[in-house]
Structure formats: C-alpha cells, structure tokens
Amino acid sequence: MLKGRNLIDPMDFTLEEVEEILNLAENISKKREDYAHLCDGKILATLFYEPSTRTRLSFESAMLRLGGKVLGFSEPNSSSVSKGETLADTVRVVSCYSDIIAMRHPKEGAPIVAADYASVPIINAGDGGHQHPTQTLADLLTIRSIKGKLSNLTIGFCGDLKFGRTVHSLIKALSRYENNKFILISPKELQIPQYIKSEILEKNNIEFTQVENLEQVINKLDILYMTRIQKERFNNEEDYLRLKDSYILDKGKMDRASKDMIVLHPLPRVNEIDYEVDKDERACYFKQAQYGMYARMALISKLLGVI
Ligand code: NCD
Picture 1: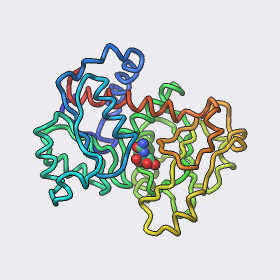
Picture 2: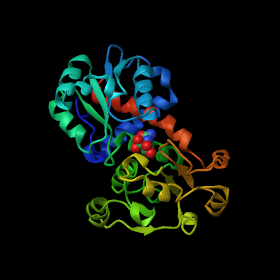
Picture 3: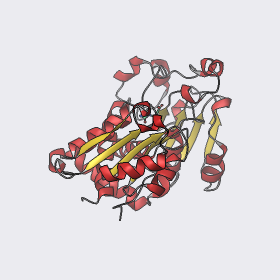
C-alpha cells in the first residue's frame, strides 16, 4: 500500500512497489488522457530550497496533467525561510495547504526531518549530494522501456560520482535486480562515496570496477549514464575548473560503443555530451526527461491513493 507514504530514499519501496509505480507510469505514457482527472481537487506543494528547473517543472507538469493544482516556492529567499523559519515549521504549515509535498534541499537528510513534521506525504526531490529517488524512478522507467529489462545489464556511470546524487540513488536501485554490473568511471577525486561501495556494492557481492578512462570501457556497456560535474558542491573553484572537462562524450567515443548501448543523463548537461551526439539514436536523455514526468505522475497518484 503506497497511499500516505513518503519517498525519501530509493530503498523505501519494495521491488513490487517500484514495479507498481513503473507499470502505472507506462500506462499513463500510453494513454495520458485517461488520467487527466485523477488528481482533481488535490494540491501539490513544491518546496525548492535549491535551484532547479527540470525537476520542479517536471513535478508541476505531472500534477497539472493529472488535473491537480500546484503551489510552492523555488527561491527560498522569497519565502519565510529568509525570516528564519525552520524547515519543521514550514512543512507543518504547508501540510495544511496541500495534499503532498515535493522538496529539494541542499542539506543531506533534510527530507527525513520534514517527514517527521509533515502530515502529508513528503517526496525527496534531491537532498544535497545524497539521494534523488524520483530521478531514479525516471531512470528505471527509461531503462525498462527501452531495454525491456532492469537486470543483466552492464551500466557505466561517468563523471562526478562523488557528489552526483542521481548516481547514488540509481546504483542503490539497480543493485536490487539480478546480475547487474557497474563500471564506475571518474577522476580519482570524484569516486563514489565509500558508503555506497561498502554498504551497497560489496555487501551484496555486486561486480563493479572503478576506472578513469571512458574510451577503454565504453564498448562493454549496455548503458552509459553521463553526469555533470556538480560545481555547487565543490569547496574551491580551482578544483572544479581542473575537473570540469574530465569527460566529454563525442562522436568518436560513440563510434567505439555497441550499437545497442544507450546514453542517459539526468540533465542539465554542461559540456559533458557534445551536441553532435544528440542526433545519435542511442542518445536517450530527452526521452528520459519525458519518462520522468510519467514516473512522477504515477508516484503522486499512488502516494495520494487516488488509484
Ligand atoms: C540532477 C540533480 O538535480 O541532481 N538533475 C535533475 O534532477 N534533473 C542532476 C544534476 O543537477 O546534475
């Protein structure tokens, strides 16, 4: 039963529950008009304490396409936060004004605090460099729709694996399906956090390798998940400038990859994927954004218990 639940971490739902959401998202994607009034009379609040366009608009579009309404802020400085209101008080109040809350916060763990005080479901739309479980639902739906499966895949994650919360969440989620292998491609300074390695990969005996060179491994991949170097999480600009162009996926590299490999990216892209790659049929990142909206439509409907 998903009604009334929160989504803070990708492991909050069982595999069956994730499947339930993905199945609904798939049905919505096939016949959107059938779901146009599912959330009539319901309100989604989006509390974004950190910049975002895609994720916030994806949530808002999802709710509007379900017939619901949206309110919220994308600029904490224009809200009572600037007067010193605590997160706990904000969510207590916003719980009175809305039926479900999607929030993004620069502090890791902030959505857990919010969930303690809210009386409506809380969806984590990204907490610092930690987790991003709704991007994971988007990614799972994209992979399942295009590859037809979520198991027996070799997935390459490339770029900023240290701060990239979408990577952390997707690794967690994909580690629950059988026989997935990970190739983790990053500069030494931006390797995935130790807790993902020890608590997820090693603990579950999942095959993974850490490499620095994309060209050398690209031909082994079923999925290449590119990421942006997360500038806002760096302590000093010098490090960012040194690492920002560590990987640029271009036609030359795509020529080395299998014809069935797909390229994903949570977006926004800075310059880690050359624009010429967009024309390649294996580039699926814009489809992924579309799937993200369907995944959020399904998630909102399930947490509200309207279907
Ligand atoms: C990602 C995020 O916010 O973590 N973007 C998103 O959700 N669409 C990835 C990123 O910002 O690089």
